[in-house]
Amino acid sequence: MDTALRLDASWVDYILVALYFVFVLGIGWAAKARVSSSIDFFLSGRGLPAWVTGLAFISANLGAVEIIGMSANGVQYGFQTMHYFWIGAVPAMVFLGIVMMPFYYGSKVRSVPEFMLRRFGPGAHLVNAISFALAQLLIAGVNLFLLAKIVNALLGWPLWVTLIVAAVIVLSYITLGGLSAAIYNEVLQFFVIIAALLPLTLIGLNRVGGWSGLKQQVADSTHFHTWPGMEISGFDSPVLSVIGITFGLGFVLSFGYWTTNFVEVQRAMASESLSAARKTPIIGAFPKMFIPFLVVLPGMIASVLVAELMGPNPEARPNDAVLLLMRDLLPNGLLGVAIAGLLASFMAGMAANISAFNTVMSYDIWQTYVVKDREDDYYLKFGRLATVCATVIAVFTALLAKNFGNVMDYLQTLFGFFNAPLFATFILGMFWKRMTPSAGWVGLVSGTVAAISFWVLSLGENPMVNLPGQGTAFVAASIAFATDIIVSIVVSMLTKPKPDSELVGFVRSVTPKESLVDASEAALPWYRRTVPLGVLCMVLVIALNIIFA
Image (cartoon, rainbow, N blue to C red; front, top):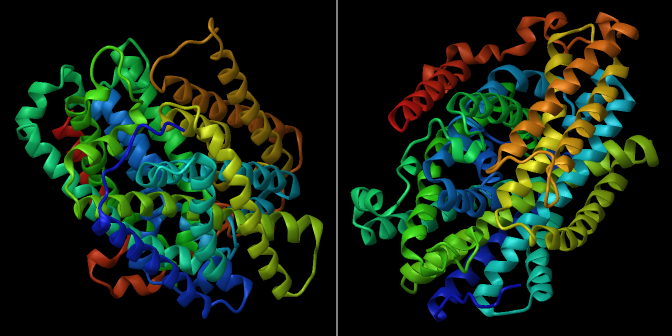
């Protein structure tokens, strides 16, 4: 690991960071008292209010992707990065809350792969469970690597030591309190992260002379406009760029991630009611719209203030932008808050990956295919063991993330492999009752293979496919989605579907409408109902796209 970067922390900063860790571990210890069954450990006993699960929903996503990946994109692409939030997140989150959560929550499944099992059978279930578990280990490694990098910058410890220390911290509170510990820590981490990023952004803007000063100093004027986003899409044509961003990112990658990724859905499934579960992603969508101003802007500010990021051959990687900006701008005290905020973000991301992994590994793989029909306490113990194993493996997958200058490239590639074909299978199976169990797993495998094949063609010194920016990930995801849909339709035509009676609660056309809504919402004011909140979200996000177009 590069040891040149050092944060000039004082005893005040160390005390603030230490206090934060005391709170984190204290929450894990307090949550331990609530864990008496596997449902308590994996799904918080399905008893959390919407505001808690909503903040946890968005905090679970405030890991390496948001803080390091998006600030790195801010350095490289500026406001074009907003597409990952305004096109690549909010619409899908609203769709998840209004359309898909009634199926997830109402069917009482314990995980997204279990939904696949009951809709399509063992083939699709096993493919989904294994691919999801693998993806979580890889993505947990990203968060762990960046968490270790903060400790390295603070203390100067070598890579292997910082990886182990960071892993032990997360492992401690997840093993103690399960999902409840993760969720309540995520709520705490949300506020700590905001407290870290807001001063950094405001001080940085003041240093460059405000908004007008930043516009004068950033050489590329396109970095202050979201559309047509040709740099980030990799297309030379404005029309193709808009299509690529709208379809590849806004539909395939976005809906694939937010509507089928159990890391996020698990938080909503821990809610106390169907109404709370539906509102969870929509509550999270409101801060999601405005967080990019605290993430992308620091990257843009760093590109004109940090010497190592300037010039034709910068010494530092875009991933270092936030750390370098903290080093140059923040006084002691605020530096400690910022360090705690970054540690919070990476722990939230890693904890979300690990808590989702242990659920899928315990319920969907071990209980379903390896050791069946044991007492509940057995699976609770296995879940804790799976947590330990996942954390150990993440130490090694963290070394893979080290090789990427911009972690967004790495993560978008993974999402294209796993989430895009899964979304195609989900959306077709949820709205087309003719889709068969065989089509479920064959479509998934075909879509994943198609995405990986396209990615392989983009490798090497003389690739057959060469798209700059993150266009390769957009196109790979689109190919995976289209392949899955086509193969699933063809296979469905050649195989036998399930009877309607087995599809109730899993396919919209055969599920009674009254089971898809919470009747108690009718008596609530509009701002506490799912659909009006979702509509308000969409109005705001459309306005942001127009203002910064």
